[in-house]
Image (cartoon, rainbow, N blue to C red; front, side):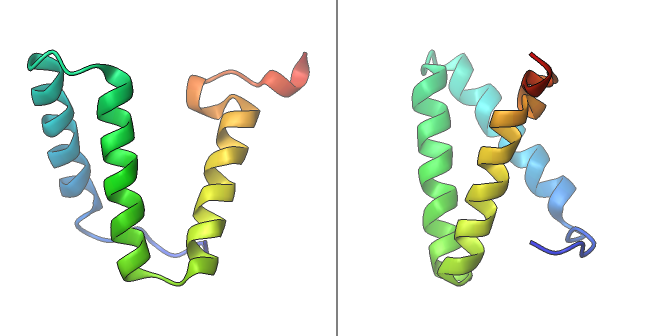
Length: 79
């Protein structure tokens, strides 16, 4: 991905997703099921919207965030 400005509607989209997650949790849907469904939907949308190379870069960025501990707010590389 590039250092472009995020889309103007990103905050709105994030708020809608947060509400959808809140609703599913309230319906006693498991966290893994919610996350898997959201990820699957996001991947399908990306596949219709961007080139495969862009999807790979997005996934590589996500992998790097997991490996660095960024998602949990911990730097795991410091052992």
